[in-house]
Amino acid sequence: LRRDSIIPRVIAVNMNILEIVLSLTFFTILGTIYIVGYNFFKKRKPEYFVYFYLIFAVVRLLLVGSVILVYALSVESRPQVVHFAIMFIIMYVVMMAVTLSLKH
Figure 1 (tube, one colour):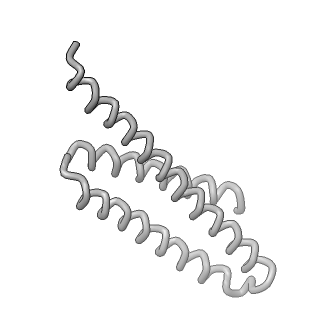
Figure 2 (cartoon, helix red, strand yellow):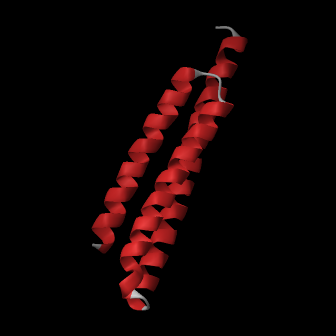
C-alpha cells in the first residue's frame, strides 16, 4: 500500500464532510430566517405575509443557485460538482418540505 495513494482519499473524504457541514449550516440559517420572518409577519403584518413568502422563496432559490454556481466555478472536477449539486438540491427540497410542514 503506497502512502501517496491514501492521502488524496483522506483529503477527498474530509472535503465531502466539509461540504456537508457547510451545506447543513447554510440551510439551518435559511430555515431560521424563514421561521423568524414567518412569526413576525404572521403576528404583526399578516396582510403582507403572502409577499414575504413569495419574496423569501425567490431569494432562497437564487441563493441556492448561486452557491451551486460558485462551487461549480471553483472546483475543476465535474463529477464532484454534479455530486455537490445533487446533494444541495436534495437538501433544498428537504428544507422546503420541513418549513412547509412546520408552519402550514
